[in-house]
Image (cartoon, rainbow, N blue to C red; front, side, top):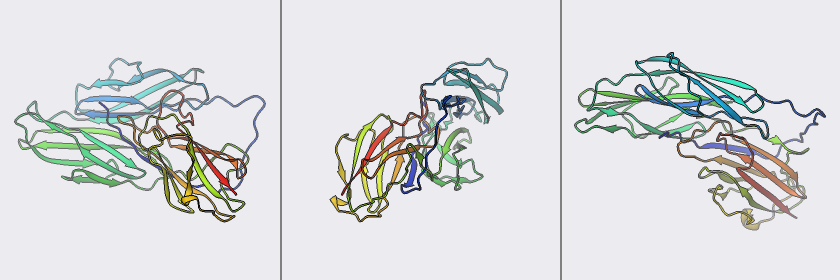
Amino acid sequence: MHHWLRAFSFSLVLALSACGGGGSSSGPAKTAPTANFGFSCVDLTCTFINLSTSQDTGDTIIAWTWTFGDNSATVTTPDAAHTYAAASTYTVSLLVIDSQGLRTTATKSITVTAPATAAPGPHAGFNVSCISFDCTFTDTSTYDAGSLPQSRLWDFGDTVTLATTDPATHTYPTLTTTKDYTARLTVTDAAGHSSTIVRTLVVAPPATTLGCASTSCSLMLTQPARVTVTLVSHSCSARHDTVVFTAPVTQTVFSDGCVDRTGVPISIGGGAQFPAGTALQLSVLSGTLPNVAIAFTPILKVSGDFTQGWTLIFDDGYGGPGEPDFNDLVILVKATP
């Protein structure tokens, strides 16, 4: 089992200057896929999870080639597993090819360690969940009969270590782009036998820009109006993709958008009328999807205006064929004078 858990805080002030752009008669240029993968290694045995995405509409990734850095045979499945013969640092590569024939390679260095001794002994494991830069690590290690826990050491992959604590909390440095970290947990039993797990996690900052799907990206009330929000549709598997109004009032509109009821307008501020010139602000938080890591920065796009209402389309950042598809949440914000 893979245990990447990821929550992403996506906060926007939706009152931006007008923006837009023209198209080309020849159509958009094709974009090469984005190759990426996560990994989890317990001692010498590793699992590799494909997190690659294709950005072009209707395009998919059709081929994967894994190289493990130890002269072993390549593997051509989307995900892969491999056991190394000896403790060392290895260079692992994933080559992906999309249906247009475009290709990209992702390469990462991994360090695996051999268990200190044969059974009985510990078997390291941990789960991690993050909201923006703040992450919680929970020790899930198991011990053979006759092996008793003695100590643990966390290494968060950013030069910070922490002993003993479980669960452990850690705040990563403020970033402006998504970054992979490699976290490590070493557990040791009373007899001095140890086991280590190393795992990648993706830390992503709150978004600070809004993609324009029309000539205007402003959610500004041009007249005094009451505001409602409707979940038009959802097509996501995560839990707790959340929509929260932060101004002019604070209100959780949808606490679990992937399963919340669609088609029901929710009044903001109990139906209060807000004055002209009010900028509507909200946050969208990408929830967690068990056993899957976030693959790219969640994205929100908006179209519409004060008169017809604003349609917000959200992709929560989980990868796979056809992602991002901008249909995880479709939200209508409507102002009624």
